[in-house]
Picture 1 (spheres, rainbow, N blue to C red):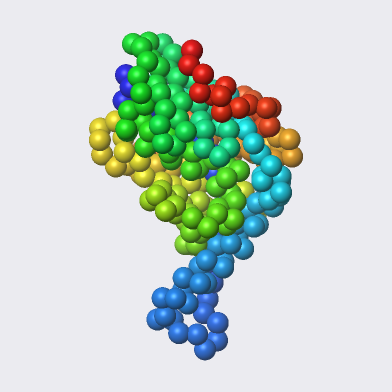
Picture 2: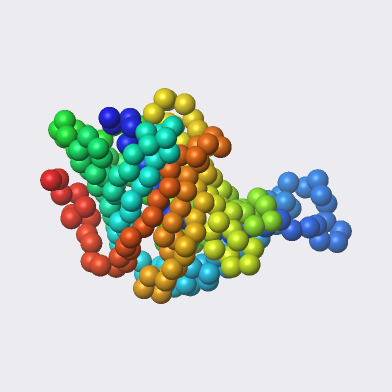
Length: 252
């Protein structure tokens, strides 16, 4: 059962990107030039994405987020529905509560450790679950969108409307943006699945609405290795409601 719910960690992240041409007289063979151009363009598009979301200053003051959703799994993934409430307290605390067909599953992580509660009992967070949780923390909207302010991360344009963000710990995500609005269209990353193999995940976002001055997606679909995996619909977001790390870490 533990392996099955690993696939339902969902979050939302945002960025933009594009390639630029060589300036007159620049050498196309110089890797330093391309790295500089990609970084500059990546930062520029990132600023555009921040503005599309509501502005960098609004994102910078996000301290906590809660979102409640219903997830519908594709037939190949189980073909059932579940409800999930996700909590985030900056900079690195998450809690997820899932109502599964076999009972309730609650996960807490702070990026280094955590715990897991299932109908079978409580245990320290397993290594594979912790790895997924680290990715969820990395892809939190407010912190990821401000990666240009984090010296431990690299941001570079990798396409006309795409950027790639990397961390010193080896986490990576590619974000593709709508050319007209700057809002996130898709995010792509790899993750180890329940079978122990690495899979490509693609999440496509839609139905953007204003939440306390910040635009958030209320619908998303996920593919795994090109096949439909799940669809989700968010019923409620709460931003800066006063959540604390102590509250998230409290066991049931």
